[in-house]
Image 1 (tube, rainbow, N blue to C red):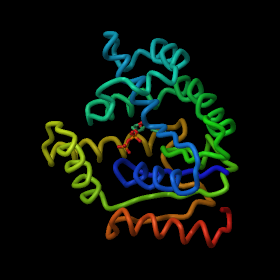
Image 2 (tube, rainbow, N blue to C red; image 1 turned 90 degrees about the vertical axis):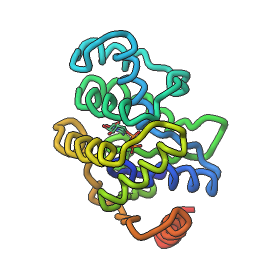
Image 3 (cartoon, rainbow, N blue to C red; image 1 turned 180 degrees about the vertical axis):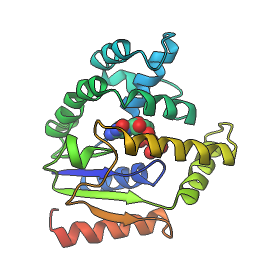
Amino acid sequence: MIIAIDGPAAAGKGTLAKRLAEHFELAYLDTGLIYRAVGKKMVDEGFNLESIEKAESIAKALSPVDLEIEGLRTDEVAQMASKVSVIPGVRSALLEFQRSFAERPPAGKRGAVLDGRDIGTIVCPNANLKLFVTARTTIRAERRFKELQKRGLEAIYARVLEDIKERDARDSSRSASPLEPASDAYQLDTSALDSNQVFAEALEIVEAVGIS
Ligand code: CDP
């Protein structure tokens, strides 16, 4: 059983994905972390984010422990991720990692929930359920701002909003796997919902689709 969750930055994909994974006893993969790890390694190793060959070789060599690198959750690293994720060779190198997680989930789980930008369209086009989670840009910026503050990270609301807009524009306009809903995805606008309501709506969709 595979559940694919896509959507723009800070729409609530991760929170929903984790709850669905727990509820249905599925493995969970935050695919954004993979791109964040590649972007961060590039900068830590002193390379320019536009250095295509270096980004591809870092992506090819990526291992699960790299997802535990400290500091992956900052907005600065999110921008790095967005920049390296336009490179087709980086995306293809990371595709196998994501597909094998979905096909052979760890710890003997019977399936997986993956969240990102191209899960329903490219990584798992045959997923049992595809959700496209959105929310108004200012609401997403407020949520991310609070989340960063909660993690003890320095954040300025106007800057968070600009970062999100910039990243959404880049993610949606790139030619390799742009951010877009799969034709068979269910759209979930979370602007007026809290995380419990989002989860309840997703469960209703699961029930309607009849996949559990
Ligand atoms: O948490 P947030 O939604 O802000 O971002 P994320 O899911 O951690 O993703 C960070 C960046 O990685 C995105 O802005 C995308 O550029 C890239 N990404 C991607 O291209 N494809 C994915 N499947 C996941 C993330």
